[in-house]
Figure 1 (tube, protein in one colour):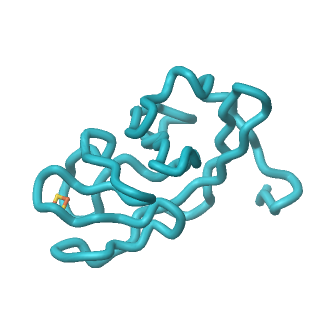
Figure 2 (cartoon, helix red, strand yellow):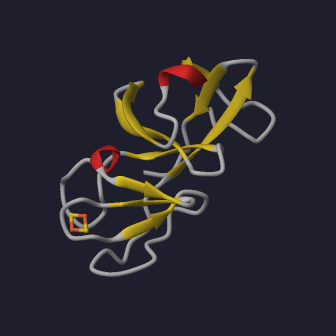
Figure 3 (cartoon, rainbow, N blue to C red):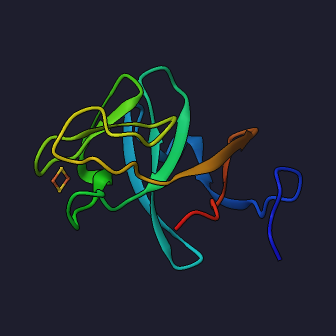
Length: 113
Ligand code: FES
């Protein structure tokens, strides 16, 4: 059955305090490895953890503004859209839905692969 914007399957991941003030933490949700990222403006995002250029973890990268940089070759991804902002990556990383309820961070996985 497919989810719509009104029927997302929200999964509680952590509390906001368990995330770095600015940075990323890796999590596994329904067998999918994701990065939960707190940006410099305090907003929280969730993207697939694997860089689209190589098989490395984006959660080990550096967060700046509303982007995360892959530590291996330096591609920077927009946390809101998943789009790579500089080479060598050319394929966007999948962005998942995030909501906050009090201090709790919830994620609903995107249906994109
Ligand atoms: S592995 Fe991420 S930019 Fe190359």
